[in-house]
Image (cartoon, rainbow, N blue to C red; front, side):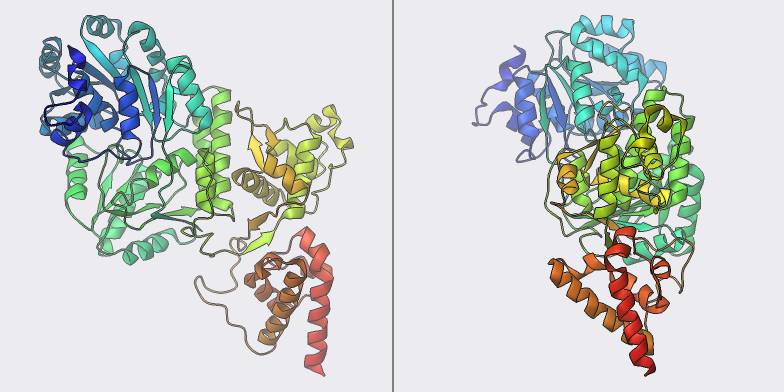
Amino acid sequence: MRNSAAGISADGRDARRRVLKDVFGFDDFRPGQDAVIQALLAGRHVLAVMPTGAGKSLCYQVPALVLGGLTVVVSPLVALMQDQVSALRLAGVAADTINSSIDRDANVAAWRRVAAGQTRLLYLAPERLMTERMLDALSRLDVSLIAIDEAHCISQWGPAFRREYEDLSRLRGIFPDVPIIALTATADEGTRADIDARLFAGDAETLVLGFDRPNIKLAIEPKQDSKRQLLDFVKRHAGSSGIVYCLSRKKTEEIAAFLNKNGITALAYHAGMSKEARDANQNSFMTLSGVVMVATIAFGMGIDKPDVAYVFHTDLPGSLEAYYQEIGRAGRDGRPAEAHMLFGLGDIRMRRMFIDDEDTAAEHKRRSHGRLNTLIGYCEAAQCRRQILLGYFGESAAPCGNCDNCLDTAPRADGGAEARIILAAVAETGERFGAAHVIDVLRGHETEKILARGHHRLASFGTGMAHKKELLMSLIRQLVAGGFLMPDPEGHGGLAIAEAGHALSRGDVPFHYRVEAPRGKTRRGEGQAVVLEGHEASLLATLKTVRLRLAKERQVPAYVIFSDRTLIDMAERAPRDLDAFAEVNGVGAAKLKDFGRVFLRAIAEHGASGSA
């Protein structure tokens, strides 16, 4: 009886398309939705990984109405459940939720509707669903489908593991004939495998949609005067709606007040506010144009406002998964949008402190630090950001032309020599150790761990003594972000060499890294253009000629030799020896060796001709 609606209706439309049009008002499915729905209607378990804004809810709402009976939806947030129920009811669908924020009489009334067979979709938090009383009651009803939203919460490998989700692994045994769908927007390959194993014992059809959101421009800039940076950005988008994410509730309030003081309509949203205040601000954001929502991560799940023009992070997110999910709230209308992040050393310290203060096992802390390192590598990287982001989720892509690195805002330096000594140290230590140990080997530190393993006798021991620890750590993070090194999939912190890393070791592929201006050492005011005059300008022209000649000899772009910023610093300093040349911004050990004497000769000759 239940599946009778799955056939073709009198007007020639199959049941799922009839529901899609008649109930939800859509003419066609978005990419991937129909494949998920058909798998569920065929009785198969499904793990659906779909980007934010791809329409995950319809993947279980449509089959729920086609199948009939009761669909149980597991959701982690009370506010999200209530929003979904309200939306379904407005669409004419009998939906209910039973949760702790509703008074007892309302919960009892909801259950009576469920027991009477009147309710099509019942939304429950995992801890309420997995009580023996609820499971026993549901087992006597006609349950046709179970949907688990935000399924990455079940995985200890994921960035948002929730212990109350662990028990959901029992559902397959309690309801053996009921198809289960797990949905998430943020799951890398390891997390997907873990969800499949825990929830489905490997018996699920995994459907992964493309993660790319090509209309969103990706950009990251060093945190300097963060309020001024934010204000300048928001003013460039005057009249547009945007979301500004902050790390703390206090900062959320401060930033909202700051924007309002400067003529920007801004609202705050965080978990410390009353429900009435949150709802009022959310409603204003959803209905008015040109409003900026300043929020913690409490804001966002289930928010489908298509015309969000930008997402601005004033602080570092918790992981690449979190970053991807948060920026995905921009540009859902397909129009150009921006994801802009400020990145500073203080953010890293704060995030590490959060991880260390978590009441979790040491293994979980290691994985969290590993995810944070991957995010930091993404922030520091010189290559296309979209390539890195998609690569993290298992997709390959060409350079996008729509991120700050592709659009060329930061100078790059050749890090091939530095990368090769790092890769050699990883190889010689057995591809088992983390970044800290590899750096100790490179810098020649005779730690207890190094001496116990005889690593002080390796050929790579001490080969990185010329480099600061911070640079080596940044290079390692960028090598991971670029796919040259692989973090241990078990989360123990070890590094292994990927195929691209072996090619880099052989010299078959290049490696360039981002060169940042030294923090706290600005020679001119922020944002001022560098203009050289007289002798310095003439020297800069000479240095560019030398750079071009070297680039042609090596058949590489000129910036690969040295960036303009490096040449300007070189012209200003006019170094006279190798030690002074090494202090030029953007000169690493390899370039000091390869190009130092060539440029010193050019500087000396230019000086002689100028004084003649």
